[in-house]
Length: 243
Image 1: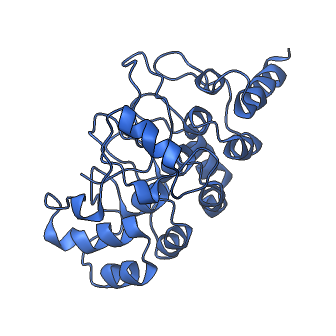
Image 2 (image 1 turned 90 degrees about the vertical axis):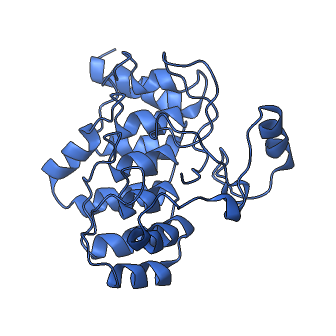
């Protein structure tokens, strides 16, 4: 099980009332949190003693590098997974050169290598994989595409690069409308994380602010009241509905 970056503080779903710390689109997993790689709400990463104290109070265990368990991953896939998660571009290039399989082969938890680099926020690796032909619309075991992962983490530059790489209005439309097993679009994930800049980007590209997920929630309803992301989405919804 790979450690996930912290994508949100609260997972609001009718399925659960508990706080889940980890990647919003990867459901049903027990997460190890890598504190040194933690993504915090304002986009900074690093050491935050107050944040660490919060997680200790919530009983969340932080993962050291030695705790990352790749034992269930086939041996021939481990170099790819390790390089994708760490963001080591040279190692990723070497691993892919030595890999006999398909670049879109699921390597961990149904994720392709492109999913992992988007999940962990490594723009240079994302660019490299797309140059090598990675599929923008590959789906993980939860039905999410790489854009879901980038939006869930608030990775604006990665989301923009994925969108630019679509190179086709119909393909971009499919990406924006793709839903995971919870019925969430990439905009739902950006809204849940309250990433206003990513929300603006997706709306500007044609994402629907009125699309509901399996629980009948629009993206605006997943952001806390009073937040910038919520205001942007409510305004977009009002314009669309003629209010």
